[in-house]
Length: 234
Image 1 (spheres, rainbow, N blue to C red):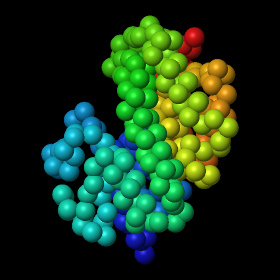
Image 2 (image 1 turned 90 degrees about the vertical axis):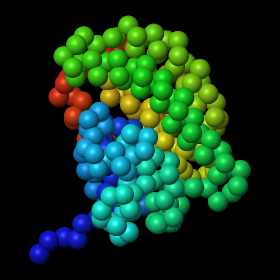
Image 3 (image 1 turned 180 degrees about the vertical axis):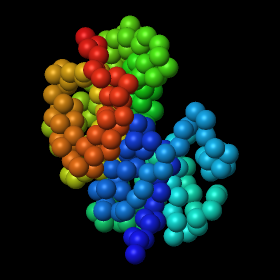
């Protein structure tokens, strides 16, 4: 007798912070899911049909359809919103209108500004080069850490203030997104946050959550095969 497959299938890789974001939401809600690997740089034709932006992740809900393109949703924010509706408890979207808007704003900031700086400026120059057998562009990564990251990290630090969470008084999509995207840097480099005490404390709290730690550990094991040691960017 075989177990019934999970309804939710996430196409992508745990190396992607956006795949980890979706996985974290599902784990927090106790929603069963599978991750099916897709090489976004050379995706199969069926994946191109369901990912109009040619990005990961894409979600399939088998309870709706098992054949492409029906039953699929692209974009991590859209996917997380869908999982919230399908599995409403515990809620990861604030009931208060202002807190809800604030959480969505911070989610977008992490998905764009933080992801662009940390991903294109640090993760890719190091890991993509190493993965191709080339010398990592550590100079670019260090320049990004020294000059691009400080105002981003300072804003994320100030946005927390004295609060434990970014929006409202409970875990939300904002906390999950900031943690998953910020940890993309930690895959390839040491990430001292001493100058940002509120953000540093939030980062440590989030790292301790199984929903964040589990997917990150899978990504970390993959990265360490090609890059045994993290770089010092200071």
